[in-house]
Structure formats: C-alpha cells, structure tokens
Amino acid sequence: MFAPSPPAGPFRQGEILSDVVQVRLLVESLSADQQADLEFEEESHPYVVVLTQDCDLDWDFTSRTGEADENKRQNKLVPNILLGELFPESVIRPRIGKLDRLKSKQDFRYHHIPAVPPECDLAGIGTEPLIADFKRILTVPCEEIYHRLNFGIRRRTLIQGLHMQDLSNRFAYYTSRVGLPEEGAPPILLPPAAAPVGAKAERGFFQRLSRGLSFKSLKPPE
Image (cartoon, rainbow, N blue to C red; front, top):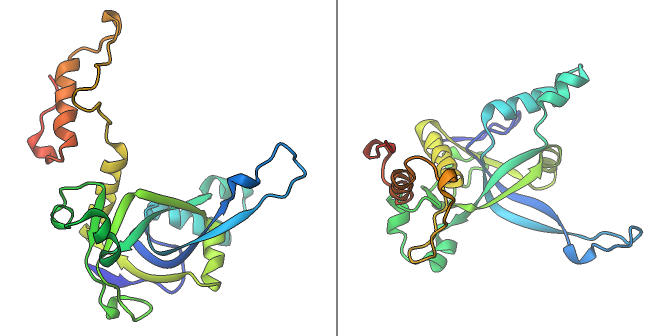
C-alpha cells in the first residue's frame, strides 16, 4: 500500500508531505490606497497529500528543468499544486466523534489512510493513521513548494496502486457531487418550457447518488 517517497524528482499523486507552509494574504491589509504595503501570514500544515495527477506533475517538472522552447514550456507548466489536508486520527476524532462511518467509507467527505510503517517513510519515522478531509484543500505554487524542500517541507510516503486510485476517485466524487435542497425547502420552479425532460427521474437519480450507493446499484434516468 505504501512506499517511501523518492528523494528527488517530481511530486507524485498520492504522495504524503509534511510541514507544508501556505502563505496567505491578510485581507485586513488590502486598501484602496495602492501605495499601502500588503501583509502576509504563513500557515503550517503538518500533513498533506498531493491530489494533482501524475502526468501533469511530470510534465511540469520536466518543462521546468529541461524544456528550451518557451511556448512548449508554458503549455506544460502547472502553476499551483493541489493538496488535500490530512489530520491524525487523534486530532480529528474530537471534531466528528466515532470514526465507524468514516472507516467504512460511508462518508465521502473523509478518506481514511492507515498508519504508515517506518520502513515505508522516507524520513524513517512512520505516521499514525491519517484522515483526508476533502473540504480542506489548498494550493501552493509549484515553484515555491519545490524550493521549500530546502527549508522544511519533507517528502514522506507514496500511496500506491489501487489505494491511490481509491483516494483519487473518492476526492473526484466529493468535488463533483450535485447539491440538492434540504427536505422541506421550497421547491425551485422552472417555467414549463425550461423544465428538463425527465426532471423527476433525474432528481431521484441524484438523490440516490448523494446517499453514497455504489454506481452498480444505480440506473440512469429513463
């Protein structure tokens, strides 16, 4: 399930990093006076997992280190790397209570990652079980995060094979889900000409989908 992170080269989808720093603009420092100095703060994230796809990461890294043609280089660059915040079980348990639904994959907001053994950790330390919260995602400029490898960020471990695909699929499902009104909320009425064909069937389809049923058990609206 795990392998140590490579010590060099591009980041990988499903790679766990530690001590990632995110620089954020302080909104209070924004002013109509363009001469005013902007202020920034740093937020440290103990653990994150890389969510950007391998192919994009590889093209970006290759173009930064060896692409002479500027047009091709700009076309391959990934301006920001997408990261998902990870929390140790001991940290997130007080927030959400029992972890039974989370560990059985019934809650698509979260993804459970078992403890990483020391031999699968580039740092040789290992980690306790970690929880990905797909509502807590962030980006860091690629050029900056590679540079910060010299100033504290650590590459730790790779989630491999089907386990990485499971993480990626669950993240994609969570971010592409369709939000539906709560029960009892006033219905959204459309003019007859604008009402989609099979709207009732379509609504029922997405309601079942939102409950986390497997795709095999769902039939598309007729």
